[in-house]
Image (cartoon, rainbow, N blue to C red; front, top):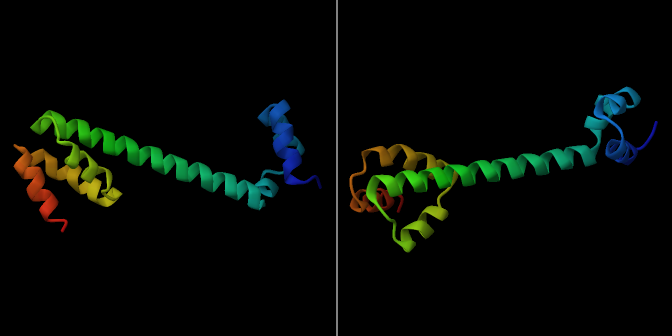
Length: 108
């Protein structure tokens, strides 16, 4: 049985179907290196998703209540994902920056 790194290196030169014929897929999935690579990819994906959501909410807020002060932008950057999701729902009712500030006060 060839070591896992051999499979990775083979993947640099050969097509995926050929590699799968040579190596059992289950063997690769059991590898701690494979699991580490997978976990790193999942973490990156979650970070990108959170950043996209933050960006969308900022655009929606700007469209809804106008240009946001720098301190408000900084505050939004510190929100957790759950708080960001809650803000995304709450902003639908906002009419002015005062509504956003009132929403922030509920966090404290």
